[in-house]
Image (cartoon, rainbow, N blue to C red; front, top):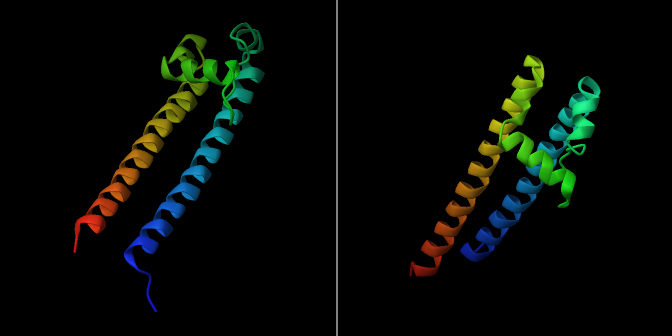
Length: 118
């Protein structure tokens, strides 16, 4: 009693969605810990930048955090420990996006093949 190809693809898509949400939640939690470290080590700069912090919903603090990381503004802190941690976080985000997009592409390819086979 096996699954037909459409059910298998639907299950795969569900696993992809749940896995992606878990990975994104983990990424956000790590970013929040990093923002907390930034706030503790450089409170004046953190406040002056609008208290950048990643979150689950769009907002000015999330946008500011994304820009702070993407534009590598953390290099201006003069804090080698935070610089390494922020750089690792930035690279982690790039890997996460690449993983999610490539795996979604794989699912789309499987869906295309299953629709056109037979």
